[in-house]
Picture 1 (cartoon, rainbow, N blue to C red):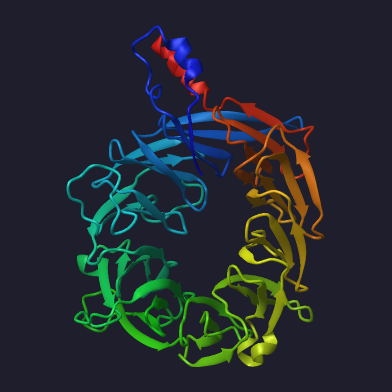
Picture 2: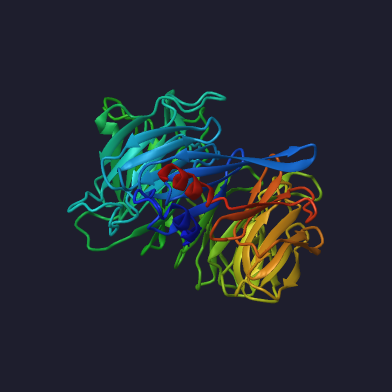
Length: 534
């Protein structure tokens, strides 16, 4: 969330007698955040070119906090966190640098960027960062006359792999010019072939993929391009979804990618194999295809009750599901009575055996029906593995409780004025109509509660997911963005005030009597700069 504020009058009055006004006086305050980090919360202050960290704690059972400010480069664009929440990444358009911030050790490393990139993609293991343009039409972050939209820069934050507890030290980078204009980037999990671990970045392009081996030393292995249609064909296929098999280091033939594209009824399979004898390339790639149905729009991967990997392909308006056996390529078609375009996966223990089974919620936004699907048995049981439920209002989105073992999900209904709690184990819903528009939602660290803020109402609403009971906790004023810290368990409510105002609450037992409101977060630096300018 980006906020622009104009609270500078008070400081201008203080500093009006000087012509040496600090930077930020003549421009609005622009703030990105808050976001959760490994130890607290972070805001990117774009005007003052710094990252502000709030670290909450409990002292004698009462909430306390400290703030730290970390300078970044000129004209920062946005804040991206690595998945482990330990590193912040900021592209700085003014000096064409990347600020890499250790949010635990409070250390910043500046890396030069060869181009005016405007976007970042981070690997799931928090090791690799790719700086790139947002899309082929992106104007970039600077004022260059020409720019190479195919160029990317790859940063390895932990060369050679990260050891437990290792902090940022040496960072390596390399610049690549891709062979196709990128449409999107996907990392696949590391895999091992002939004792060598490979880290692949898959670059989506029109009718093609480029596979970038992030740690390859030989140029011949660094980039490999695969086409879905002949290069001379005028047909265009756009890759939409990429899934991979689960790597077994003992099986040299098990690594495959599956690609869903628009413009094709087929699912493309890319096998990643050991090199052929005498081949100078580290990997042997082959492409195959199998039917995905009349109009595939989405696919998910799962393990069935025989411990075999399958794909479930959703075919949207044609109301057909296709189950694909990834080992054999065989498919099973299943006609259903509903249009489904979206899927949310989860695990549930079998009530008889206690063995975990894979399930999915299937739905289409703006419709009323949600399907509970037992993925473990759908190939054998067909429509008997599907349990439909009609909700009281149209679906806008579905959010699974992130805590492990959770058996609840939340439906945000169209218009953002109503919620429903879905009981995943017993297949029923608890409707929660509202009288105000939702501002934000967040789950408690335990997964037992949902926290919500609403527009123009000064309350934090706590909903018990077990029974749907709502409790209102008074706030000093209406809240906007919510952030929840896992340890210590603390809730941050951002009131979206121009001068910066947030309220901290106990994440286990929120209570208005123990809340802590922090005022003037974004004015502190204004006054500090005014003092330096006088």
